[in-house]
Every structure is written in C-alpha cells, then in structure tokens.
Amino acid sequence: MTAVAAEAPAVIRGLSAEDYHADRASISSTGLRKLLNPGCPAQFKYDLDNPTAPKREFDLGHAAHLLVLGEGPELEVIDYPDWKKVAARELRDTAYAEGKTPLLTKDHEQVQEMAAAIRQHPVAGPLFAPGSGTAEQSIFWTDPQTGVRCRCRPDYLKQLPGLTLCVDYKTCRDASPDAVSKAIRDHGYHQQDAFYSDGIEAAGLAPDGVRFVFVFQQKTAPYLITVRELDQQSRDIGRAKNERALRIYADCVATDTWPDWTGPVTEIPQISLPTWAAITEAEEYLQ
Image (cartoon, rainbow, N blue to C red; front, top):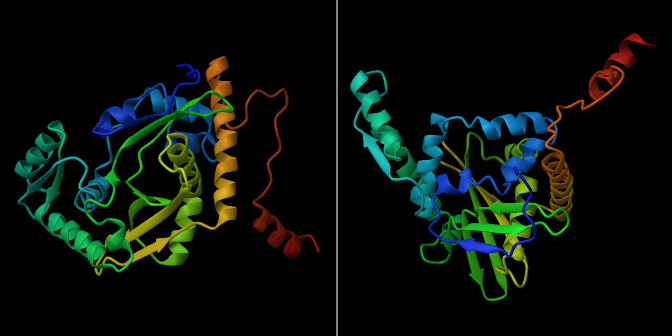
C-alpha cells in the first residue's frame, strides 16, 4: 500500500458504497480517525487487511439513510416479528447475499416514521428536499502537504448560489444537544467536518466555501431531531487532528511500519492515573 502522488481531484456519481469503501489507494475520514488515540496505526492496518462484515445493528440506520437521502442498498422487508424463526433468518441472510438491507416489518415502519419526521421538520426537511442536492457522490483528492490520496462521500451536497452545504445525517440513541456534543467528541465528527469540507473544496465543488451541517435523529419515537453546525474552534481542532493523522499515515506507508500506541522504546514508559482521578485522590490521600 503506497501513498499516491498528486492526482487531480475526482467526483464520481454512481460509485457503489462497496467499491468506495474497498478503495485501497486512498484514505477516508474514518480511517484517519482510527490512526489517532485511542486507536493506533497497528490496529488500523489490521482492520484494513481483515475487514469484517457490516454490523447488523447498523441496518436500521442504513435504511433510514435510504428513505431520507434516496440512496443506499435496496430494502428487503421480512414479514416476521423477530429473527427467532429459522425461516426469518434465512430470508435475512438471502437479503444480505443479494446486497440488500433486511428489515423486520416493525423496523420498516419505524424508519418510515423517522423519514416522515425529517420531512416535517422545519430545518431538516428543506435541507433534504428531493432534487435540491446530490446524495452519496464520491470525492477523491490528494492532500497537498503529504501527497496522500483522500476520499469522502458526503450524505447530501447542495450547491446553491454563493453557498455549498454539506448535510450529514446521523441516527442515534439520544439526539439532545448535550448528547450530540459528546458524540462529536467521542466519534471525531469534528474531524469529519473538516476533512469533508477540505475535500469538497479541493474538488472545486465549493468556490465560496462549505457549510457543514449535522442532522442528528433519535431512533425512538417521536424521532426528535437536532440540527447543528460546529463552532470554528472545533473545526480547527478537527483539521489539526486530520493533519497529524495524515502525516502519521504517510510515514507508515513510506516505511511500511505500523506501530502500536507505544512505538519503539528502549525503556518501559511510565503511566499515570487519569488527570481527574489523580487530582481527586491526591486531595484525599496525600494531604
């Protein structure tokens, strides 16, 4: 696996999600995030060489994306109350083999209600208005600092006069603003924001800049929605993390060395309690 020399940006419509994710000549936002703590290059490389099957708990989210965005794997509704019966599981496995997303009848009804809630929302509805943008187009570009080939796949890209909007749709257990803020930190979504924005601009799709908008929706009734843009400091932090991850990736590719969290050392490093625990326990026991 080698970093690709500078190539022209490319925007591809109609590229399947499977082909997009299988591309080994470029790195995605998800890959970059895996290189940084709590991940590490060794785990990233192992996962790259040993891909796992998609997790079934993501099926509902994939189905919701299809109904909201109009793009994604075809749905196969399985008319059973659960997966306990052998016949239901056989139908499910057949759907997977055919590249479809299997859903129980009750789950299909749920994602339909979720999509309806999006359409009725005063902010999210217009953002995903049919025909107002392009869903799931694949963008490839070369990072000018490292020569690493990058890729992103915006959920919904709206090119308006003097404005380009990148709208990212996420389903979640809790869409309250506090939970959304924590999810952004925990999952590195501020890195995704900066990475996608840079890719969209590199591809010439945003001559006046990009506004990246998150749409979070709860997976339980009444399917509440929170729409937010990141503040500039959070985006700057995300971009700085991306820059470090790109340097790490470029070095790993150049040397074909994929270190763990410690890297090569001659002495055993020390480790300490988490900062908050050290302060609390020092106040209690070291006075």
